[in-house]
Image 1 (cartoon, one colour):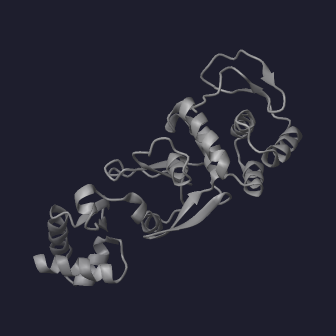
Image 2: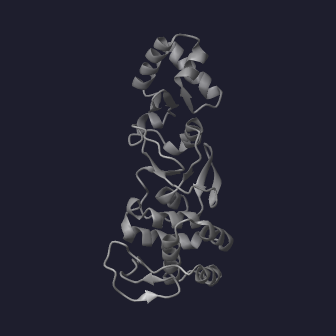
Image 3: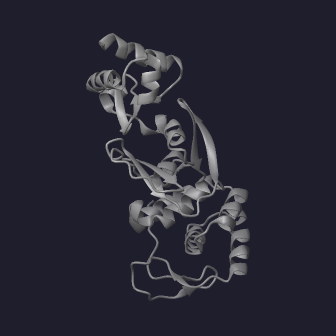
Length: 262
């Protein structure tokens, strides 16, 4: 039985599989479900595989057997199994672009629908629902384990503002936005803000970028476009009192000071 487990892992690795289901194992070994479950229990105990969710497993690489699963490595096949679109976003994306001040403890993944999977916290993965999911601003990047989807610096900035509470709060959001400006591209920025569904996040991003002295090639078309939208006034920080002057270009109530870190 033990040898069958090792042979199963070896064959899946030969096929390039990083994750597999109970059905995959049954088809490969051609034995009963009960026998397969006994083999998988042994493989889990020997730290050769880890459970992703009921009936689905990931094969651990040698270093992962000691330090735990690297969720990014199995993300694409995991999402394929769930039959959902996705992208790595928020602080995980900011970290990819070199703009996160602290490496996030969990992989933050944006999805178009909600999933409740009990083991996500142990897997160091967290899902976020995005109601108006779109592929605009999503890039496909290559890593040592293959390809994965990740938000562009421009989409990352807008999302981080929208999911402020999940990104370390207002102070951290300010610092990340300031760092992301260096990675922004005029065309990508324009495409993102023209198609992003949350106007308040667009206003806040424009205001922050201007305060952080973003290049004029980014800001001139941005300000020109925002004027055509005639947005309603919003506070810079929604959790503070609505007092202060209004910045008329962005219709932002300046109720707090932006965070700076030299």
